[in-house]
Length: 150
Image 1 (spheres, rainbow, N blue to C red):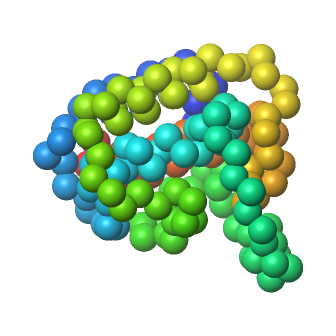
Image 2 (cartoon, helix red, strand yellow):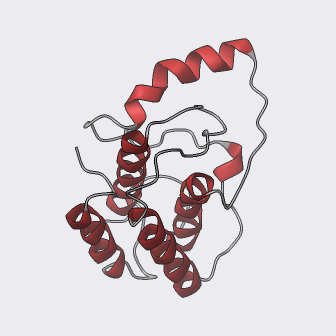
Image 3 (tube, one colour):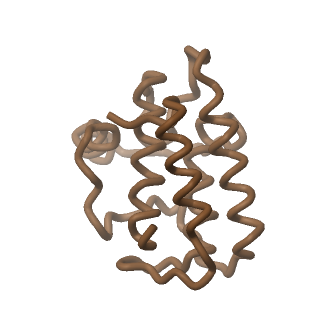
């Protein structure tokens, strides 16, 4: 399974990101390329402790999320048009080059934290092992880079 904690996997994601241009069009979804770049920073910010979300879930939501949690870090690609948590929806225009630079910085920072053993809980899914955090971050970025044909 690919993980951002693997040097080659992280470099592959960064190379794909370098191939992304402002003119890339999404194969699915509502975000443009700048919004996607901003969106992808959210989960990295959560893991890095740069952002804290206080999400209240009801019992039904907790049960549903626990069923879907393993799909976040297994080796199967995510399906297209999955719903996005409202906290991670980006609907305002973004500056492409600025968001691309910000995302690259977060990826580089995250991928170097191979020695971290305790990560913040995810606001929706709760506890992840370090391995699961690395796999989930890779999978999320792969999903969106694929969405924009890179």
